Length: 575
Ligand code: FES
Ligand code: MG
Image 1 (cartoon, rainbow, N blue to C red):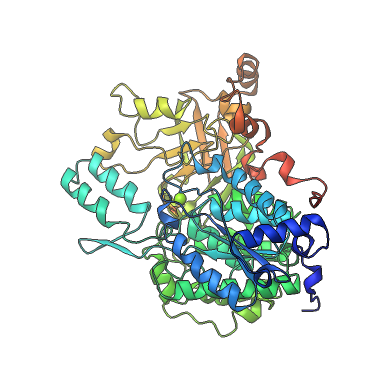
Image 2 (tube, protein in one colour):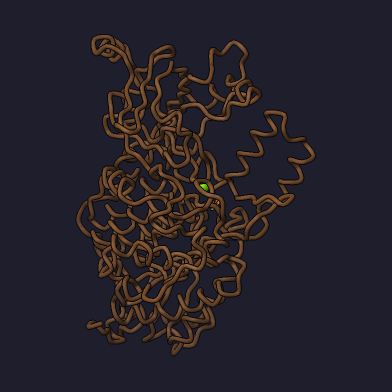
């Protein structure tokens, strides 16, 4: 590393080391909190941005884990300050955490900007926290290291492997179909999520933390360490130690994330059989770093690189198994001939150097390239008269027989209408129906909720039909599965063609050809367009109104337009 900073070049020196009245007041207030001058003046001030809360089961251990980070910072000669930030526990936050990812990003950016911070350890991992933390940090561009919350331990019920999210839906459908009793359901409720930590499936959390490691923002191998493992606090302590060195070296995000590292992350998403949410988040994260990423890059990567990671929902194992198999370094080593190994990382070494010697210890969990988990690609990007700006499907988690399908649409305008009527005996629905939900996109949802795995009608479940083609402008939880067409863009709420579809229209899905169309004559579509009126706004005030006005569509990452671009924000004046 060529750049070494001196103490008077630290950002925090502007607050603490000047010889004016303000710096006197800053030091005075530091001492008011019980810190000796020598503890914080002339040392890198490191923010521990902690997204812990008691309504975030995946992060509940981070309250204590910050102590390990603190130890590492002090050991390396830094000054730790813990700053709580918005906690986005995926399952608790309504209507959806996606409504708040950008708010967390704003909070992180402005916390780092407005306070005397030289570098930060970002503590998170539940779905939206990873992109939220990193998007804010990329825009602020001071050194950061990501400390992943770690997955929860493997679950098991009556001898059967139980994964968070994936089996929630499976058991619920079994209960609705009369194949599981109420007592059994209550039993599994208490057993399936057995420790703190993020979902142990390859849902959005594990996908995003794996991508973060691929992008070079974690310590090598950090992602798959289970939250409850003793290695986790040791990793956290090392994060604290490393960030101090990164501050002295001025190793900021813009020197780590590159077009090559983003390409690596896309390739790894395919091999993970990762969550479709990654498509949105990675586009948004890259854009914050000024890197343009199109949906087509995901489609191309998934055609090239098969699903190798044999974890639910695409496979049969869980994150703890992935850890024992060698974790992400083992996967990266396996993919090494299709990655750019010169990509930089926060370790100060190239990606290639950080994975040198990494081995896979279980070829069932991380499959070799010639024996993938499935022949089906992790993602396919569809286009057609229903989705001119693209839609996403996860063939690896879909039913093969439905990937080329023509069926009659049954359309619901919003989620409430769908859930109230899905079991209506009068509903004309069968195994060939294309079930459609609209009004569930970024603006329409609002916040593009994870409603995309539309519920299967009870009537079909009772007949043993567990999957039909489902389509929406919503997202889908990465832990879910089914033949679900997602992220239809532009969404119906802003007048995308999905708004013009009617119950009874024929819909054609052709995944091999990457097509998604409705068989409606253009003249008829024009008539429907002329008669269409935009639905009213959800919010008259507040954050929701700002969200509605500024959120971009799914293919652009759902960031706010004013956060994606523009000139650098000035540093605050310190008077
Ligand atoms: Fe937090 Fe799945 S709910 S990671
Ligand atoms: Mg999730």
